Length: 200
Image 1 (tube, rainbow, N blue to C red):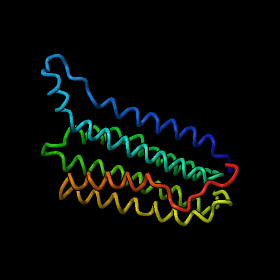
Image 2: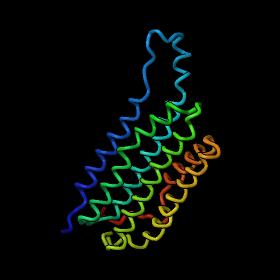
Image 3: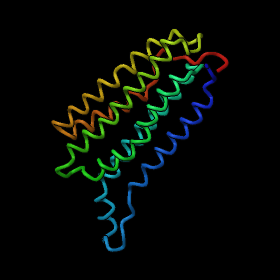
Image 4: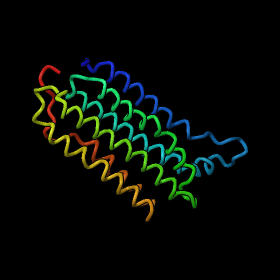
């Protein structure tokens, strides 16, 4: 049975909010035995880097999820399932973030970066599955169908780009992380023809 999407959006917003908040818990306060404090804080740079990168990712994913649901006006059971699978990936982000933060600058950083990028490959795949299902099953607002092709093209880059980041992690973790930053910036940009329908 088709339903309105308000509850999907509200539930999803809550998951995004929790996941992005949990990221900060991985940055620990140096204990009194770790002195000088300034040095102890500086030594935590991998945690700061991983936090900022994942914060940007989750923030951009939330922006794109919001953009999708300004176009998706109806729902069904399959759409609910695909949205839950996407949220499964979102809720997992704090864990690979912690793994990456703990291993940057160590012999385990390559494995950590591969694991980190693997989670984002999963998320990118289900972003595409969710959007393409909505398009193919005519769950979009009829007034915004003209922009669907542009959005589809932008999202299609995601799985390929994150697979590239995963592959780059085998070669150079720093390059992989740099490409991750560029991807966050790219997906923060709205599609040029994405226009909110009047009255929404």
